[in-house]
Length: 236
Image 1: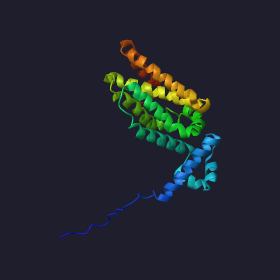
Image 2: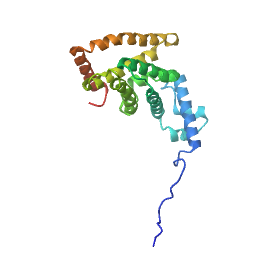
Image 3: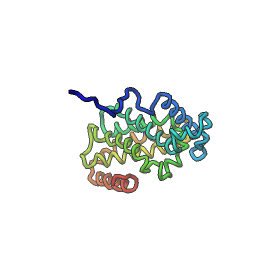
Image 4: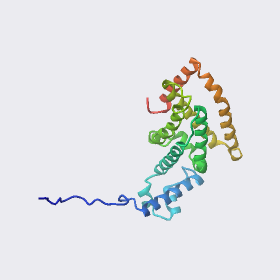
């Protein structure tokens, strides 16, 4: 004989509680408003009250979705790195230098529509201990992007040995960061200086690849990686 189970919560179908279409739409509108104001006024000059007023909502409602400007910035990092990682899966096969250049150009393409906001965030990216490029709170985004450059090396047709793959991938990730910062400060028309810089890097990479055949160069890459991890990353 079967007994009826009691006190079992009813299993609901559809959207999880608290993630209604209206809630998603409200959060998206507040996010876009905050990003627009940061791009127009700068990070420090934009307040949460400014965002609420521009969006036509109460500050309390804004805090429900974004308790601070930091939450807005971390959402931006999450979206950009997630979009980049998804699109990077389409990078074709080839030598590591070609895959690196493809990943670098793709990154600039993904970030392009957000340049004004990212330019306004330069002081945060470079100097903020909680929201900067190497802050603990932004590690999720950093590791996601770093993984693209590690894969560009490890899955290449001419991938170096296991002992060098990660070191080279991390150093290429740092080169990519340097190019992004150059791009953010680039005042040339259409950032053509950045385009020329990427082309210059592309031209010198074959020579660098040839130099990697020398033990001294390979040792230099591994030693530089150790120093970079100790100074900038949180995995050593």
